[in-house]
Length: 94
Figure 1 (cartoon, rainbow, N blue to C red):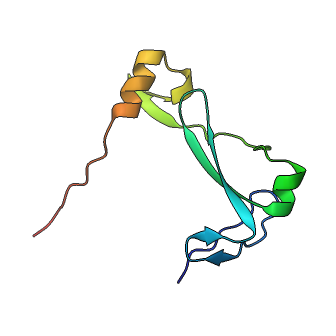
Figure 2 (cartoon, rainbow, N blue to C red; figure 1 turned 60 degrees about the vertical axis):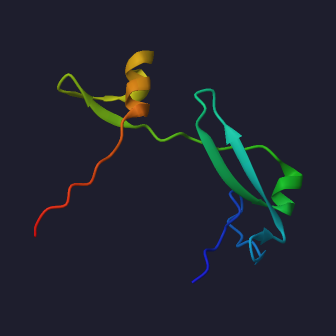
């Protein structure tokens, strides 16, 4: 089944031909911390407002020194350490 792409603003399903978007745009936004967001907008919504609005970043919590704290409240070196962490899957069983 093909993946459907929706307009970020009006939730309209965008028409595709292969990998090409026929009636919309793919937009990439970068935050100050280099986090990248990929957003789809239909042509009508893009004409009205080409920027990303009504965006609220997800607050990520992790454990530090025994307490769960939002990562954004950590000091810069701990935040960098968090970004460099890797997830490992351990195979259990026979």
